[in-house]
Amino acid sequence: MAGFELPRPGDILKYHIRWNERSLQPYEEELTELWAQNGAEASIDFSVLGPMMVRFAVQPADAGSASVIAKLAPTYKAIFRKRDLKVYRSEGRILIDIPWQHDAVFLGDLLSSEEYLSSPGLPVGIGMNIYRESILDDLTDIPHLLVTGNNGSGLGEYLESLLVSALMKVTPDELDFALFSSPSVSFSRFHSLPYCKVVSSQRQMLTMLTDLEDEIDERYARFIERGCHNIYDFNEAGGIMRHRLFIISEYNMLSGAGRRSAERIIHKAAELGGSCGIHLIVASVTPQSLKNIVDLFPARVCLRVDTAADSVLMIGHKDAAQLTKRGALYYLDGHGNQPAFLQGGAISGREIRGVLDALGRNYADQKGPTIFDEIDDSDTEEDAEDREDREDRENREEKKEHKSFWQRLFS
Image (cartoon, rainbow, N blue to C red; front, top):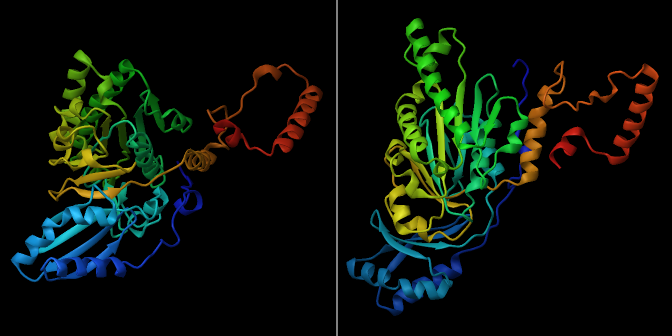
């Protein structure tokens, strides 16, 4: 769509101009004194005050000191009043990680980062680490993502943040969306955008997946005709092919034959979809429902889950079952690295309405009725005088309310 304008994240989304800072020196001095009292000698290489965690990196003087420092974990928990404090060894140091939220992390913080703004691909905001670095998943690099989290973990808001990340980065000429809503995670408000197809029943979801399979076959047939290997070669050779992002908000809604059909198609899409511009984000509040497809997704996000077994299934260790903060998560980046502890970017309903409002303005001047038009067929037979009177009354009411069409649509 020529002339399509994307809103700037900083114009709509909240973000930090500066972060809360406080000195960690008093705590460093208290720890050093505690170690000396217990016969251990060590120095603190560095300490970090992140948005959701404080980290002390400790360099013991010898093996005996290292053992003493590690065994004092119960004392640290009492000092900092944090039962979920962690003490562990990493690269010759002892790290003391203390969950201690000093700042909320907003989606605007991630999308206002240089990493997001300068990315030439299809980045979505995964979260922020302890060093206040924005962590993104580029769908042109790792094309698919598996997401899970129990009720109350922030899963619904997190999926909306991923969708908004993509909407604010690329135009409908480059990317369109197929979204499956569930009772717990609804994408219904995104249906207002013509390039977002939203379905909500199992039957519609299976139809959507069947269409996905046909789309993959069709795209590869076009590659063969042009002598291309993937969507990037195809577009560089003068072809026009958009990326397509499928988001399934609750995989566990599928059952029986529907589940088996979905698994077969998802296997195919996971293997072939990335090269032809098909991307999957599959989510569930029930991690065990994903066990037959989890290995197809090297990139995974795990918010808080109910059991250690759920956490191990998703990320290989049990720590996601111990998360306490809404939006806190572990992320496997798909490149073989250890799961990273991050805080997801929060987004409000008001901000989402602002994004949809800004994107919808691109369609406001389209000729003919669209889903963005207020259509009233009751005056089709009115004469010009009656229509003018009616419009005058509506104009007076509109000025009185001081609300735009978009404000009324999403209020």
